[in-house]
Length: 116
Picture 1 (cartoon, helix red, strand yellow):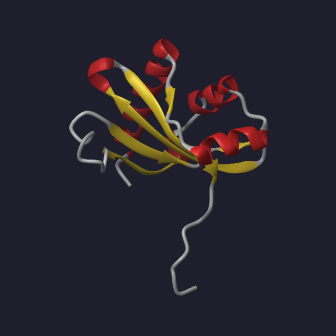
Picture 2: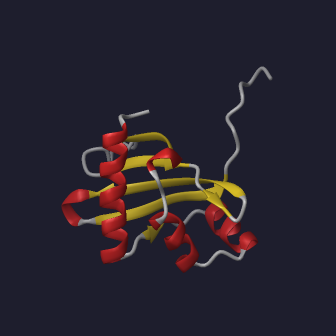
């Protein structure tokens, strides 16, 4: 995990871009199914994003792992609590155009070793 200052900067920029320009929810079936199953609207998801705290971050921020986006987009992963449930939220920002994307939203599942 990156230093708290890096996470705080990412969150400050993320929230600024979401408030100014909203965000793009990447069209992934798992995210759409999750939102529908929870009755979660885009406004509710926006509220979750705007309430993220540094302690919610468990990976990143770092350059996007996809080589097509690595030079423009920065990605971080979060596990905030929403209505008593731990979420997995993967967010990305692009500073030069002040944009934000939600790459994934679903229930958080702890990573397990393949041998367990």
